[in-house]
Structure formats: structure tokens, C-alpha cells
Length: 429
Image 1 (cartoon, rainbow, N blue to C red):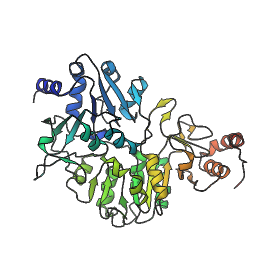
Image 2: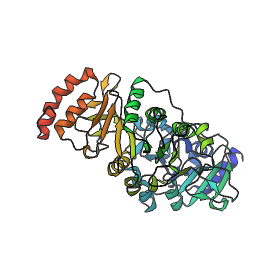
Image 3: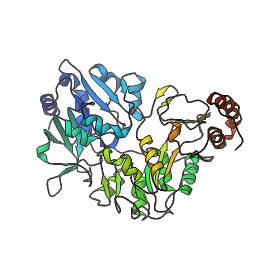
Image 4: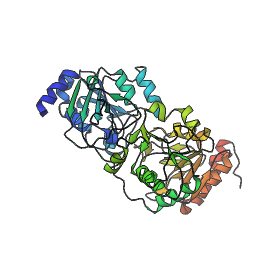
């Protein structure tokens, strides 16, 4: 289909005032999204369009497109940071687990859904390929579903599959699937990964956030046995762990023998491993982040990142240096689930410093993404602070002990005033 023909067909399907959704990160349907932003004025027809923004892996969206596009979403990292910097991204400060319900009830409108899909199987079923997440909820509400097919998109088990009749328009993709490349972990990340690996027991079920640190943790687990997967994001390290015979899912209390994920965020190696793999299912957010499912998953090790942690255990995962760069995301969902899980580990990991500044702080520079009542184990390259069941004074001591040594004296000085305001004494436990 020519670019002109695609633009004309999109104009027939998309109406002024519509809210558009598509797969985030590696699941972005590039042919369709680039056509939307290129022809946005014709599609808006003198009005405006609203676009939901998830995690980014492309340069599709740019601040100048706010001339007719209204951007809203839960995340502002990576290439979407430019939208936040320009003040054109309206942040949705919602727990990730809430998204399907907000869409399903119409609180968050979903008029048009753009999809990256696999070629159909023998039964004519198109897979959503690299993602499920909140898209099934959006598809259920949408007036129009538009898809692009690429042979390198894997056919994955587990979630919603579509027939050709479900699409208002189905085209051949002009761009290969996006890949999520990760840099080699540095010394601090490797040390953090070793600390976390020492905490995880054989037979545990893993949940991991996104970034270099989760990949470092996965690489540190190759001497373990019978690990399982129940996660939102699935990266290359998961495929490597499975191919090494470590990730078997054999000891899971739910979905025994099957790894559960929400989105594939890796390279072609990950896509090839996932293709028609019955040992992997991609499921919607209403399952991957379901509190009852998480609580019933024995030995759930939830491993998530943060920007900074204060001395009482409050966690900021959203704002760095006054700029929105993160998200509320699913961290609280998974930390609470792991805390309720039999033998679970609610872990938040972060390097002790960033650009010479401490990330264990007396006072957060951003919002409280995770309250201190949900803090479990905080891990830096300097050790593990287990905050579960600890008073404020003991939390302060344990967190100072895993801060960078050059910042501990200053943190201890600030801790006295902090605890005075909290009505607690600074003990020596």
C-alpha cells in the first residue's frame, strides 16, 4: 500500500477528537504510528487527537506534534522525555494495574487501537506478538482496530488473538520490529545483581522491571535451579536463562511449567525464543499485575528500580533533577504482591550514587511513588537493607549502612532532624 493510500484510509477511519492507543516500546506499530504523526493535520481535520504514551523505543513522537496531538500517559523515560521536557505530556499518575479497569469503564477513552501483529496461525488467528498488557482492554472498547503484519513478529501464546474480520484495516508493515538494546552493566550494577542473586532461592518466581539492572540480575542467576517467571517486562536475559535450563517454571504455584509476561522488550533472539513457545504466555495487565495472583505466587521475587529512597523507606521512581523521567508503573503492585507471597521478596534496587550525588537521601526530591509502608528490601552495591518490620530509627541505620561511604556522615547528621520531625529517636540498632 502506498503512503498516499494509507493516509487516505486512515483519514476514513480516524475522527477528530479520537483517543488513540498502541503498543508501547518494542510493540509500537511503526508504519502506522509514523503515518499518524506525519498526516496528523489531515486526520484531525481542524480538531485535535489524543494519544496515549507508554514507554518509548523510537523517535516517532516529538514535541512539535503537539500542534494537533494531545499526549497523555504514565511514563516519560527514554525518547519520550522530550515530551515531558517540553511540557506537552500530561502525566497519568496511576498504578499500572488500574489501567485495564479505567479503560474498560470508559474513564480512559479508547476510540482507535493501532497494533503490531504476527502473521496468522493455521486457524487464522493473529497474535498481538510482543505484547498484551492493557491492549485487550483498549481493543474491547475501540470503535476501530487497525493492524500491521510483519513476519518477524512472533506468534505468542496466552492472550487475545484476532481474526482478519476484527480489523477495520490490516496492512503489511514497512518497518521491522523495534528492539530494546541494553548496555553492559557497570561495576555497581554487577555488585547489586550479586546481592540480589544471593537472596533468591531455587524455585523462586521472578518479576523484573526494565533496564540494565534486571538484565544484570538475570545474568547472575545462572547457577540457580527451577526458577519461574511472572513479570510485566520480559527481556533477553529471560530467554538466556531458559535456554540454559535454569528457568523451567517447574516449581511455580500458579501456571506451573509456563512463564508469564506482559511485553517482550529485547532483541531478535528474544522474539525467536518466544515464537510459538508453549512455555511462555503473554497476558493482560489484569492478570500479570493482579494482586490475588501475585499473592498466590509462592517465592515471588519482585525486583524493581528507583531514582531515590529516603531514610525512612519512601521511594521516588518518577522525578530526577526536577524532570519527570520515570513512572508510578507496576512497582507498588508487585511489591505488595511479593510481600503477601509465601517466601516472597519485595526488592527495590538502585546504585548508591548518580553523578556523584547520593540516591539514599534524607528527603526525596520527587514524589512518593511507593510509600514507606510498602518498602521491603532496598539493595545498593554496598549491601541489603531489610526494612520489613523495622522501626523508623532502625530503617535509618540500615539505609545509611548501604549508602555510599562518602555520604554516610552527612546522612547521619540529617537523620537526627528527620527523626525528630517524625517523633522518633535515632537509636543505634
